[in-house]
Amino acid sequence: MMRNLISMLLLAAAVSAGADEIPVEDFAKRLEYFDAVISPGGDYIAVERSAEEGKKLVAIVSAKDLRLLGHMPAGSDYSPFDPFWANDERLIVRLTEDREGSEFEFANGELISIDYDGTKVRRIIEHQVAVSGYRDTQPLNALHGFAEVVHGLPKQKNHVLIRFIAADQGRLGYKPSLYRIHVTRGTVKRIADAPTYSASFILTPAGELTYSVGLDEEALADGINKWVTHRYVDGDWQLLDTLDIDADAFEIIASAGETEVYIKLGYDTKPDRVYRYNVVTGEQQLLFAHAEVDPTAFDFDRRTGE
Image (cartoon, rainbow, N blue to C red):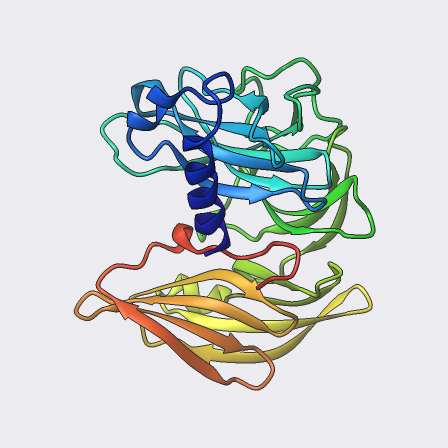
């Protein structure tokens, strides 16, 4: 909701801005500005913007006068998206993987960091060797796979937490890991490896790991969705609960606070459902049902989990 509100305000303000700031003719284009996020200090706005050939770029503008300060352009086979402010002046974006003939957007797993003025572009996570055009500084880690920012660290402004999936996975899928990563150098520290498959991590607003929710290995091998919750205590996982899921598909969308997650249950013969689930009490709250739910459309704060 907040992203959409900021985008609408940006669009409305830009219409009245001077021609030397944002050209009026730009607003004849389809869905020009969307998914805007404001920096923690309130000085800058990062916004996704339509580009040529169906691609998009991420632009950074001044919150005061909407003056363009910097941008992350699209490449021949990717577009930047999903901007996240790691601190007051540095931004992290993900990259799409363009697939011919597909109308959907797929992340390629790379993370690029950039300053508010478009400088100091760094690839801090790479999908595989030499997959990205941003090779000015190689990340100081040996991680090759899929990464996404899951939480900011208010007390460590040069670091964020990422959920990382290694490129080489077994036949049952993946067990992700939680890392702390430096937003410029790319140096990492492993926090924990998930005890289950397709797992999500639940974190406090301060970024402390509390729970992991994922799929049971034996049940997964038999084609059954069995949800397993573990509590993280003193660097070790303790089994908390298991839950058989009566659905054709299951996906954790995001954590919600210190003990809850948003989950999507998919069905072949009835509408998908989205629940807010408390992993400690087992309480489920149905949020809505729809014929097809797109988890990527959810807007949540990766600093608070809400």
